[in-house]
Length: 275
Image (cartoon, rainbow, N blue to C red; front, top):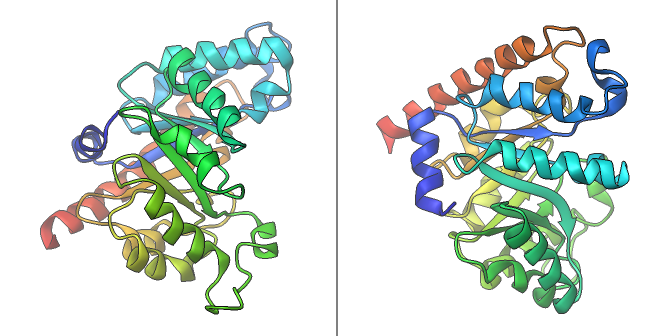
């Protein structure tokens, strides 16, 4: 999915919600516990309940890889079930020497119909470049993540400039790709960084985790990072997936997604009016 299509979908649906499909077998509702197709059936019902409220889905590979061949089967079936009308992010956090990254990119972009892959920039330009060679596909580069451990490296200040490392990642990442094929991960748990992020990268999309269970605030993110072309995909996982642990889990997921979508519509309308 290219940039203009993504933007059009955001404004058509009045939503920049990305639902993370981080499905844990141990947290499935009782009727699905122990079923051979329990994970896929859970994903299917979540997707059916939220299709009209979100523009993207983001399955995290760890929740599927940990289950071996059966997990990969559920991942592939989930990707195929989502279809082409939603932006699909493989949350794989890949990034290796060039020929290895090329094979990772082929796996997600050619074998599977994913639109984007999360990528670690730690190994530099040649580890990210292969993800940027596929038309209509995206690399989502980790800049400042939502976890507490992000402070260990990402917020460390460089000796020469005094700027935090995450700023260098964004400045360098802009040289690798364009607003048409590269996004940055910026966690909502760091509300103080969004103004600076937008000063460095005013046109790039940001994938923003950390809203909901991790405590990030949607209004703060939107106030400092929403642009006239939206420029945001806000990722929410557990607070939607596990809004209920009972048989009504899909209805509860829809209600939470709807609550978020309505807030997003309000912010988008304000941008449309002022932009």
